[in-house]
Image 1 (tube, rainbow, N blue to C red):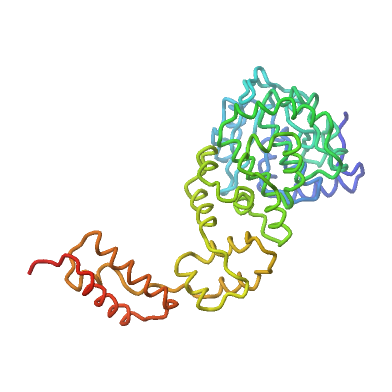
Image 2: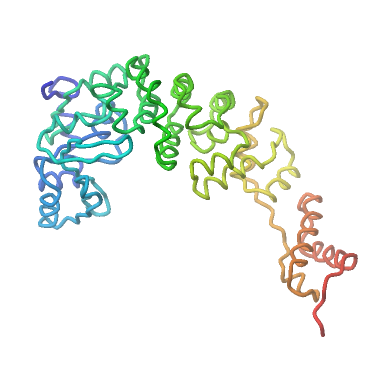
Length: 409
């Protein structure tokens, strides 16, 4: 297929050229590497009229030549992936990945051995989907060898070439299919792609937990991930990568309530309380594991919770956790007002510390924490209203009834 402009007219090409010219750092990079082209997601999203964040480039030059040119121009070059031909240019804190054109020499379903090439079509042919296989020159010319623009306009996610071949090169492409399907699909799914995914889905077991979890989060970050998840269930992929998701009903309720597109909140809806199996299997970060556990353990507050109930709940858990939990309640009540109240209600602070127990003559040890915990329960039962003096008096009464070891005078 010959080079094309995004809208097949001079106006579309002019708009792209103006976008490029308005990016001073990109223009400076192109002055140094005039033969380079923008590739991948930046081209796709610019044509689709979506926001572009990261800009990646490809070049027929070898990585050492790219690095040398950048250095000569006073641009920092970081060798982020020389084995695969990638150099990162850093301009005033902004990063641009520049990768030498490549062809696959050997693949094993997870990794690829590559060789460098000067053939743009050969490089495009190794990419996953047609909508990701386009490149763009500085003047706005689009090079589209596999019909990516037509597929983008039709809302069709289609593999470059034979789907089974692309999947066997890297089984992660199965999950990437669903990620892009969830964000760009309008048409029914490509039948050849679905057949290949069904027959090769067991290859997902070869992938590292980290790669699978990263793609699951990206799938769930789509404005509406339900079509992709339903298709994953139909093809037998969802039970493989997220067996804890017994039903999509809770996620459907979550989205119907207008919840934010938060991947972890959506995971919480999908898996219920099955956090530890998921966390171990997919090697979740400690912060992710802790957040899911906190959501599962939080109480379901009624939509019309009174001030005392809110104070007690906030004394036990942060407002963000209680707000997360409010999206997952089983009933259909509107809790938007409750979340607003949680956000604006000051979290009560228990007024005593360990030093207050020690000041009464107790010796440091586990019993100090036990005494504080007992008084804190008393404070919460009274709606977190007793002040410091009242809590000190209760502590003294507690120690009279449950004396703990005192310091020897």
